[in-house]
Image 1 (cartoon, rainbow, N blue to C red):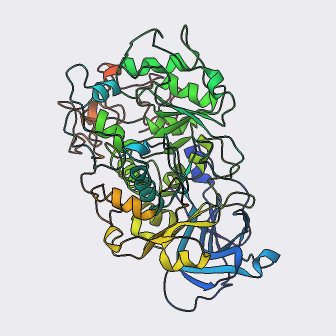
Image 2 (tube, rainbow, N blue to C red):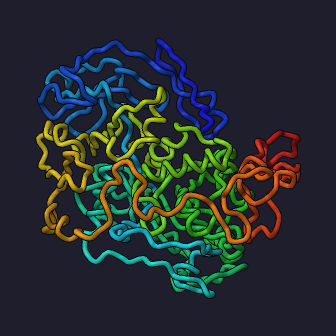
Image 3 (cartoon, one colour):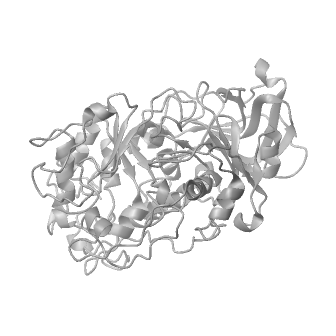
Length: 557
């Protein structure tokens, strides 16, 4: 992967914050501060409890903030689960005097992951047995329309099956999820006011069918859908989220104008902070509209590729400054957790986007960018005083870049996950230091590790009930290997491209280099494009690789 993250060792605190625009990121890469060691670990290991004190907590490790990497840094969390200080030495604060101390010289402290979209009620069964068949529009596979095969997917029958999926996410560093539902006492569910926890921002309003079309209405023009979403329903929500343009034909693209006020008889949902899920069938004009209205895109590359052979034009979106968050979508066609989705995003960038996204870019998609997609950037998504202490501690890896270590991590590399400063999941030895009511999982489910999960009992549900219900459910952890039945992250479309890079087709999109307006960046024509690769400014450089996509230029690919 082309890694545009450049480590710069500094001795003074840097000012500034990471930009969503990719070119600015290259200039504002975080500085690295080598702090003096303030807490000595008593022995070898990645992370250990040095002292058990009050409900305030200190963790020393490599700390990842918005604009800094603090080697031997420290973070102080108060008894209310809020971050008090992030610096080289937090001991001057009174709350540090009798705090519980975790020394993690072999650890990396990151904000807890935010999974920006998932259908949590469908994550108990194995992935669908997907074939080479590809779909133009989501209703074709959802309902088996127009001669297409309907993949196998089944809604959970019990709350214990939903809890199983949430535990899987918690074990892999996720602290918040937009899960289209959820259970009490595990990860935050950002779309449910009763499950959002101690956040001040209101829960998001989320809908799978903003056009009221669950029975399969597909239109190439006009907005005569069954029922466009009523803005009064989300007037008091913190943000709005909906599936939009999930497909690659004109019928998928038509949906955009109908919920952004651009078409006759349409509705405009963008007056509230908004995020569009998938956004595969979008034009360059649509991308500009999102930039101008500060609408985020929720990117699910694995699920998009497995179903449609294409995914959102993320290089174009990023160059325009559109905020991009990452999500798993669901288990039937997506990733089992965000670590696997990050792996897909990294592979797709490396193999098909000429290494456009670096490790830090991807990490931001599950932290600060994801928080921003819910208008929660003042509370979640980064490690800074005054924010909620949703935190994940990772085992340090072999790379010199901690962001690379996280993107390459497996779920076994997650040492501890805190929600509002209290343990959600992690190594039993670390979780026990907090005195929380947690249960150890059977080691045959956790790659031989002693891991605990902390569930708040509710509605008669406890861990044993969850285990009993899910004896035949899909695995909790992948143990560092490719999960069984995982859908492919290699784009393909019958008789057009199969993702294979070969001489004369360096990006595997089925268009020969000599005819390809982005020979190094994957941009095959979609059904909605006809036979042409998109080039908005008609300068012979395709939108997917054009550094100035809205200005006619002679820039190189």
